Picture 1: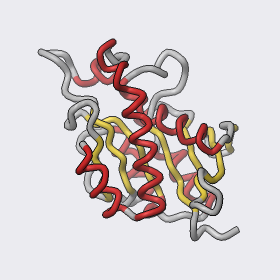
Picture 2: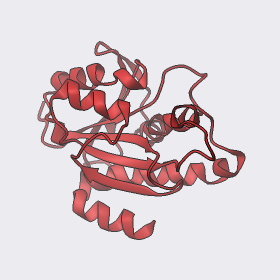
Picture 3: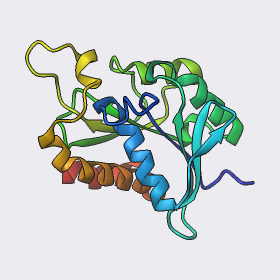
Length: 195
């Protein structure tokens, strides 16, 4: 099986229904949207992740969409396992994650760079030995007042945010598709101009 048109898309988050609506889990909300577009169900994978595979558009790129079964801070093991299993390099990996330093309802796309204090990214960089993967960064904004960031990311989106959240998820899934079909630069031009 050729990997020429194959992309691994990982949604970061914490496992279990108690975390499902948290700000920290927006990455997995996006992977759910992508799986729905592929009309593919998530299934257990031996890399300690759940995966859905398919194409969104006939003849378009193939996607392996994955959610690690581990907690956010130890996402690296499953992600590295998936790259090895599918014979992919980090350059074919798109990680979708929450980002405190970007306002809510804003997306930023990039390749490489540091982890910016994001423990999920830190663990992926450590496990894969490379920061060169692509990132779809979904802004969640800074915590209000003196609230700790660690507490803020584990809260559910506010009622006001939930009105816009479905659009954010759709836009982030569109961004993943754009990266795979048109390349990062074209995707950045479109996404960053829109926000």
